[in-house]
Image (cartoon, rainbow, N blue to C red; front, side, top):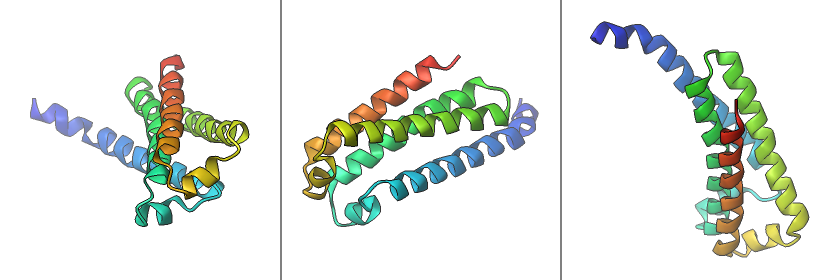
Length: 133
């Protein structure tokens, strides 16, 4: 039984490292494209920014996890991760479009706004993962 685990270790490490890299790339892109500096706001204790970012990260991670579990190639996983990133960026763009005061509410530390926006992101991630063939 142990040799089977050892034989799968390179694939496991590849997917874990690739998943971590994809998460870092998405988080970097997301925080670059948003008007607020989420990490600085989180360091200051801004719960709205934290909830918004957590929602986006979870919304990205749910489809990524399904892609890793379901697809057999690394390239397919990367392609699904790219699509998931586009969905999350689209969700944020839609939130900004339909909720004109989103940025100001996050800066004003209105946690309910961050929680609701984060929920929308997670919901999109769940739907995204469920829609994957």
